[in-house]
Length: 170
Image (cartoon, rainbow, N blue to C red; front, side):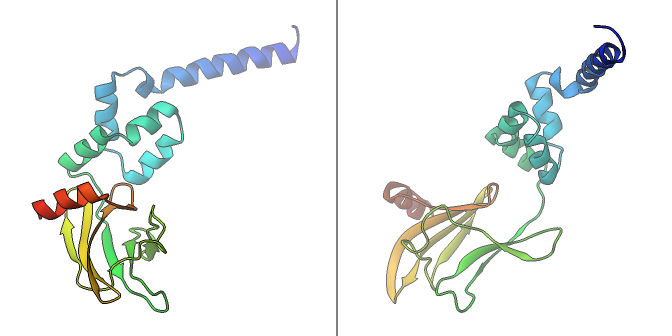
């Protein structure tokens, strides 16, 4: 190839090669890579997770969460369990740190099949989330246990065996 097009292609290839060399995170060992990501804010982790599969896997790893928690580099979030009319059952909300407004946390379970207890529930905070144990549904006591995962901001219902272990430990 001759002319402007050939020189433009060569220049583009050279630029791509230089761009790859600039990104130092590709060449460091995994433990150093995780150590660097542990110091990044949660919002930046989301942006990095979109860059590559490696970033996505590390950003979602339990090891990174534990390291961020150990270093106290987790952002403070406020979680609220509210009953807002006309909705018949209470829900979890998180106070968004930037927008300063409550955002609903959508359950992974079908909320119409497993409505949240209206009153009398016990809440237990752990490092990773909040357990909701028992309460009253339609005036009758229940031993149902749900878990709000604060790292994923998701809600899940524990199965019967996990409920027994959770109630026994509490």
